[in-house]
Image (cartoon, rainbow over all chains, first blue to last red; front, side):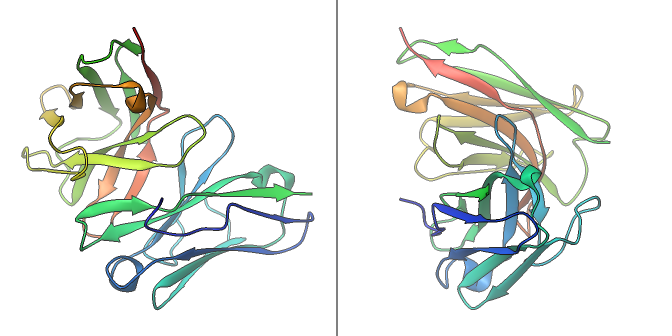
Length: 110
Length: 120
């Protein structure tokens, strides 16, 4: 059972937009930065979003992040088949004193 | 650019100690503001943070694993290492090393990962 809650799966058609939610509490998302990771099949996770809404160099602006209260959202526009992957949110939990991740969301581009 | 590479045995017997090393290239492990972390992923499951270390040797661990985990650093070799004792089948996972921005808690980049299987 993950401290951060994500939907197990989402799907959308190519070219469409999808959002992935990450729900937590005041001890984690509510008072700490959120990051998002993309894990393509058989590969290591890759940082997509850091500090709630910043993109590392090389990440297209089709990917966006936002945070409100104790929840965060990853948005992906202009979906491509190459976006099919597992997506994880992550943050620090101040009460548990550990880095935590969501359970992951599998994105299917139909 | 900065790259990380895990190395170590792919098979460990139950009750023994799992030992892995992460070699950092393209940059110095002695960079300020960054920790160096270990994260694992059991087959078909999500990510679990194990612990992290600063180049000075300062560490912090996942409380659920703390009694079995030791992370150390060798700045002369630009490496950091993980030891996990008394392993069981539940410790079977892909183990990743990654650079961690301590204050903001993001991990980037990640190593490619190494599968460690606990079995007799």
